[in-house]
Amino acid sequence: MNWLLPAYIADALPHEAAQIERLRRAVLDLFRVHGYELVMPPLLEYLDSLLTGSGSDLTLRTFKLVDQLSGRTLGLRADMTPQVARIDAHLLNRQGVTRLCYCDSVLHTLPASLAASREPIQLGAELYGFAGVEADLEAIRLLAAALKTAGTPPSRIDIGHVGVFRALAAAAALDTETEARILQLLQLKDIPSLHECCAKVAEPYRSAFLRLPELYGGVDILETAVRELPGLPEISSALATMRYLQTAMPELPLSFDLADLRGYHYHNGVVFAAYYPGFPSAIAQGGRYDGVGKDFGRSRPATGFSMDLREVARLAASSTPAGAILAPYSATDGALAARIAALRELGEVVVELLPGTAGSEGPACDRQLVKCNEQWITQEITKD
Image (cartoon, rainbow, N blue to C red; front, side):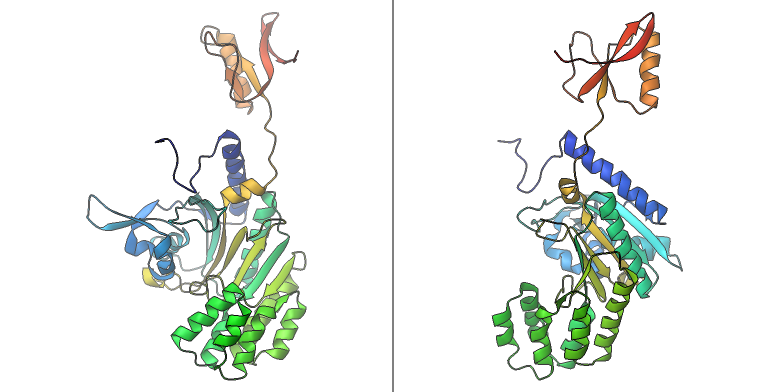
């Protein structure tokens, strides 16, 4: 059947599309009043630009095609963050702090999970030009505010720091293959295989790697980590950063996970992920990725987050749209046409009947325009 869509690709029908658009406007307005400027990168670029620097991990997720004009390989973006980094580094080229936001479709060769779309609507915010923890604090608070605005306030925000694992790997002098294997096992939470893989790692680093999967929970986990992990300067700094975030945001449901290494080859500091009750995976995630613009000519500190607006819209409580107004055909009645225009100026939905039709199958109409004493007035539609 030619009309069927590819797997994990779906239309957004009127009710879902209205929900997505309502949330898009609300969250982008929130970003705007926090000083974040909207950018709209193109859907496709030359592949080497899309996959430059931090985007190199996106190779397998990116659809590729040949440009008929230049003969070069193009890519359909799988993530907007490298594009926004290019805009900050190469086009805006500002010296101070820059706050940018975006919302548009991306395309994945494979779905991120069985329930995910291959065409997410990526909504996010990025802060460039400030290396201090205060920028991470702003990003996490803005993420929480965005989810609250969307009607999906997080039940938990997990915070980690990739510097802990990197410090252990460097101190233990792990070769590239062993480091990659331990990283994979930590991400999979495969404890038996982790014990086997770490058998030849020198102490105290072997015990530290094995302890990482157990270091998750409340702020007390950070104190446990101080006592039980090697006192490497990088680890001490990472734990101090996480303690600062917890102290600065007592109003948020923060928890800590020292084995959360998502985006390990992309992030280089604080990482965070927000969860919603009853949903198995994170609905928004982000972190620090300093140096993201290096391959575009400027190495800038950066932090930010993104979410799939389609997914958030499905989880958010649906709003009941206001009823529309049904109106007769107005082309031959100037007073009726003026009344319809005035109602639309006020934001009312007015559905005008075309000649020979009896009703509307579109927006649900609970009122109608009727003529009374030479005036067009709004009247409730009574059901028999």
